[in-house]
Length: 538
Image 1 (tube, rainbow, N blue to C red):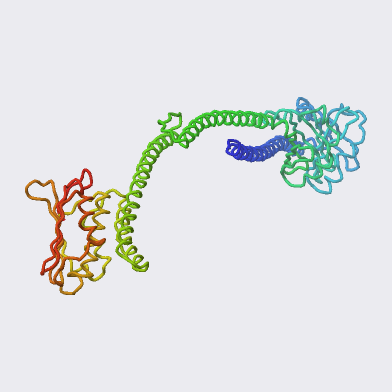
Image 2: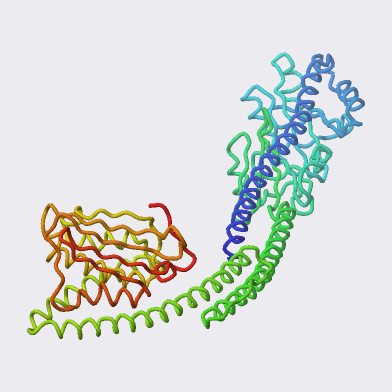
């Protein structure tokens, strides 16, 4: 993860360094061109001085008068300190005056490299290429001025010569990078002067020669196959060029140093990030192991305390696991209690069903009749169990129990008037009272007030006003057929009488009057109410 995070940053930094390197090279080339232009301006000023000197010499009256001896003497004295020599020659190269040689001594021919005829044809000052003067034993160059026609008696051209080495002071290397060279080359591609005389002496072909030929623009720069930069500038008005050259590697030392520092720094950052990630991961691993151990203990059913780690978020997980272990323990205890209660109630229910079936078997002689009666009673019992299941056997409101049993009988439910304070019945009381209400409703539909539309039933219960320790519940029928005492005690009579007395420790009375059947039960409060509950106003 650390590598994935840091590697793009390093790549981006490398990209920036490459861009910086490219910008540095562009700046280096631009500065080299500026240096070449500065050198070209220095050389151009010197050549312009020579040109000005020629124009001044033409105006000497000795030259106009044809007094070459006086001209020689005057020019020699004025130019000797500057190491500049003047030659007066004819168009065929015959020297008439040479200030380097005493006047009157035999003079040789002007070298063809002075380009006398070209200057005469062009009718302007011309600069020669560098050439080796055998009489001076050094490399020189000339600036040739065609003489006007009125000076034809003196000669055809006026020439100044100067040694190439005298231009060395005009080549400044202070601004160029260390190890680079500055040179001036002529139109033939030979070196006039160079800051590195050992590698580029005057007169030799500029190396490589093809580069000199490729400098066709007024100024510019290029890089060769060996990663060398060449910046050049044309001398204004003259055919020579100034060249600044050097290897990029020599100027890239700072960049290479920066690259090394960046690589070392990146490596250090990656190692530091990996180490930091390892330490953090180790801490996380130890914390997670603690939580795993806690989770395993929870899986084994233990109650665990909260785990303290060095990670805030994992501490919250530890608190959640601790709370979950307590909740699970409580839930298991609750499930055990419910399971135990379920087993107990199932046994009671099976006992009740068994007694019910024995009683019904005595009263019915055929299997279909028995099946019908058993089905009818089991549905009533299932009604109470279903209602208790909905409240998780925590206790059932008496109003809910009564209405639930009456709704089973459909349209007759609206004929029953219910009154009394609502309270929670215990699960046992709900089952037993449900059986009693079911039997009372069944008997009334078959024989009593609910068998006719005009009949009414009033179901009322209340605490006794004297002691409040007992509850009286009354079922009173009116508007129906006259009630009659049954000839034999059947299952229904057993439930509403004997079972009610047994289940609730109650006193039960029945009255079969002409106006209708009446059932009354008075039972201790604790036999009906759920523990820690009491009546509420309905």
